[in-house]
Image (cartoon, rainbow, N blue to C red; front, side, top):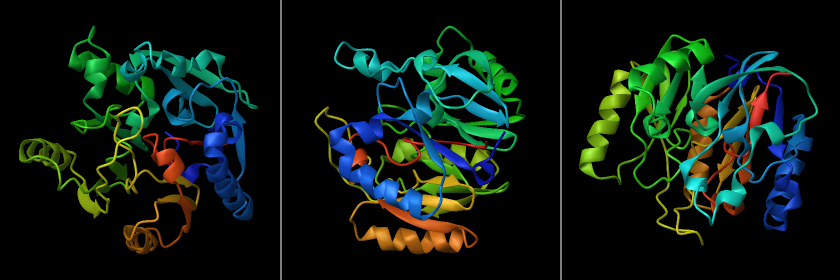
Length: 283
């Protein structure tokens, strides 16, 4: 699979620049993209800004796989209008795309070369298949050898892994701080992390017990949801004391990358941050 360091272009839902709710955020982000010469474009035909979830996974330069996008958190009458239909999205490039029979959000796929990490939400989303069938099919779809499963965060409705971990290298895994979770869940979580075989690197989080208008927890303080485009990293900031701590750690972890802080409270209020709103690929 194409890794983040190999990407050179980033797409956003066109709603990010069209919705007045995100106007200030987009103006800040656009200025940083232009200043740092990060090439970007827009996806039309979307119904929410979280394009990571409904866009396909890039396997090689011109080869992508599209998973079914049918998340349970959008199936109620109050939220069905936010459900993007992948076949209705429009972008400025052409590529070959195969189709998987599995329902998986892109935000739940943490990828690195020939392995991925996902939460156990994939089993709930595909109840018609045995767990072993899901794992086997996913290996075929992504053309990979290794899949690691971790338990989804209890309070996070999407069940995505991209707010929990980030693969740092072939042998190292960045792990968000979940010290505030209950003892039983933490025991299962850290056991699953150890079973991945990675060396675990603790990554800072800020625990903000705040809910949005939909009654869901915000993503304020979820620093691990950063996005890397080549040797440039967009790092969410939240006007918290932890901002500076995280920036210093990122510079130590990624000395060969340019760390670009992006104030992200507007989108974090809606439950996601920078990895969620981006689809970075290799052109």
